[in-house]
Structures are given as structure tokens and as C-alpha cells.
Amino acid sequence: CEFMNMLNNMVLCLPFLSVSLILVYTMLGSATLAGVAVLALGMVINSNLTRRLRALRSQQMGQTDERVLQINEALLSIRVVKSNCWEEAVVSRIGEFRKVELARIRSMERLMATLKFNAFAIPVLLALVTFTTYVAGGGVMRAADIFTAMALFSMVQQYMSMLPAALGTLG
Image 1 (cartoon, rainbow, N blue to C red):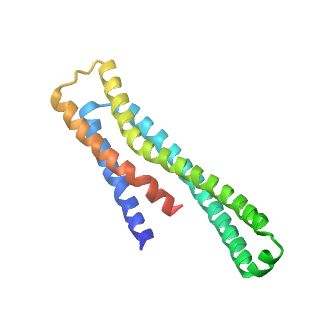
Image 2 (image 1 turned 60 degrees about the vertical axis):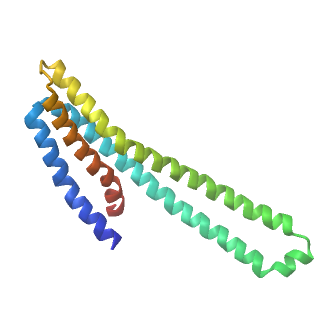
Image 3 (image 1 turned 90 degrees about the vertical axis):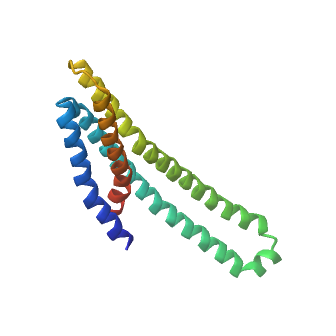
């Protein structure tokens, strides 16, 4: 069910993203192409981060399974552990597995934070680069153009925030 929802988001994201960018292009002309370059670069970066996140998640799941296996083994042999005073050794061994697991979780959280940051930063950079290019090319910005373009860039931001999750589910 989650896969179908993400597939639906993916199918809807690309046309809406395209329509939004085409509308901006009709307003701002070829300056939009500079923004599209920023968008394409952001999508490449986000897809690479998503791929790395998926690999880390797989490693973390294996590490969690190993730690749970060690805990189960310790619990099943608790009498032997207690009678031989091996509590510290067992806790230490399980603690080492937990350290590695937590390191992977931290890495995953950093990647997730980077993906979320990119989802909001890329549309801002898109607007900044597009407006700067438009003005540098001799265009004159009117309030109506700015507010309309910003509304369209807001739509781009909405669809860009859905895109990494949809790409992550499909890949």
C-alpha cells in the first residue's frame, strides 16, 4: 500500500513539477533554465543521498538483528553467565554491538536531515538563481511577476519535498 502511494506521488510529482516550471518559463523566459539546472543538480544529489540512506538502513537492520541475537543468546544462557560471573563481558559485548548500531542510526539521521534541508533549500536556490539571471539579462521585475513566480516556486517546493521519498521507495 505504501509503495502504491509513493508510486502515485511519483507519477503526480513530475507532471505538476513540469507544469509549474513551464509557467515560470512563460513569465521569465530563458532565465528559468538556470533554475532548472539548479533543480536537476538538486535531484541528482537527493537521489544519491537516498541511495546511501537505503544502504545504511539495510546495514543498520543487520546490526540490530545481530544485537538482538546476542541479547537472546545471553538471556537463554543466563544461568551459565551468572554462575561464571560473565555479566560484565556479556554486557560489554552487547554494548559494542549497540555502539555500532547507534553510529549507523546517527549517520542515517544526518542523511535524513540533509535530505529535508535540500527539499527546502533547492527551491529557494531555484528562485534566487532564476531571478538573478532574469535581472542580469535585462529583465525588469514587477511585483506581480515576483509574487506569481514565488507561488509557482512554492509549488515546486511542495513537489520536490515529495520526490525523494517517492524515489527512495521505487529504487
